[in-house]
Length: 464
Image (cartoon, rainbow, N blue to C red):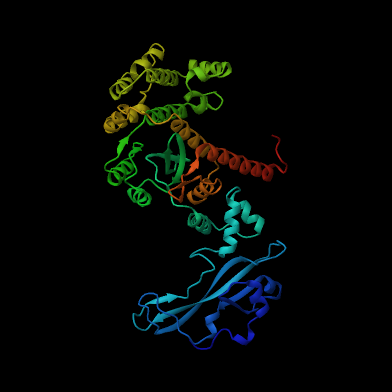
């Protein structure tokens, strides 16, 4: 290695004590004078000993130091008065070669996560703030750069710390799994549990894949799961059949109506520039009997001009009314097949309206998942009505939530609301987050983030 970079005689005990990282030693003040106070050069305390590290691969101790590479972190010094003293921490990390297995390995550290630009104690503070504010806003408050490569790491760390403290999950008899599309780009499976007549959020997965489902299902008591209500997702259905071969696997009325509603939204999207209805998606997808007089006038005026939208809207409303009095797969497939008649009813003479192809997906779902739908229709004790409203409220809350990456969204959902617990056979188990409490908190966070953005943009706090 040649000449050593640092010598123990030049180490600063005062700065080492101020840093308060047990394995680290502050060794130099080699920066420009105006940065000395805010930059801490450190090495591992074993740097000055002759003891050789153990190879993590073969567990032998015949190792040779090969090089040193500086790694830069943002850190915050401990303070008794609450002052924020953010520093630049430069850790001179050693690399070693094992003489037995010839592998190269780095010196281990425990004060920061791999690939993160912040120390753990600073990242925990940033993560705590990001639960209710934008990540950029929190970083600005601490005077550190908003590292896009680190935000996922710090939120996952925060979530893992919470999970390590949680009681084990009480597996519900019934699972509800639906796929939520967040800003149309990411599909996040949401897992609910039915505990009696209570609907509770259990988790939100990072992707809809058999691997992601298998990892989650491995943490459940599979013998307890008797019913699983699913979405029309191939990966989900394959994973559920594998994990719960003895459970009833069903697709609910809410799921069918949700996909019909999404098809109607696609029709509205094509007409959005000429659809003069306030909150058009929300208003046009409501049952007509729920509309106020003002909304009814808006809808009526718009449909007079947009004939294709009028055909889709009225077909949708008739389907909702029809399903109230009973339905089956064949009946809804017949409704899809009859959509050309609705177009004919609303088209002017010699007007050729484009087919309502957006609803074709509904027919495909009904044909592919007919056994699961029929299993639900044959069910004597249907799930509580709160299940459908819980799904709708979660989807609405996600739609309102400002865009963020999955790890931030995941942490905001699961760390801002305490999970309920029960005592069973002398053991405490968690039973998820009540959906009503969750969605209220999600709404509060959304409003807080939007309000801060308005203040930054306009320079004053907006009126309520």
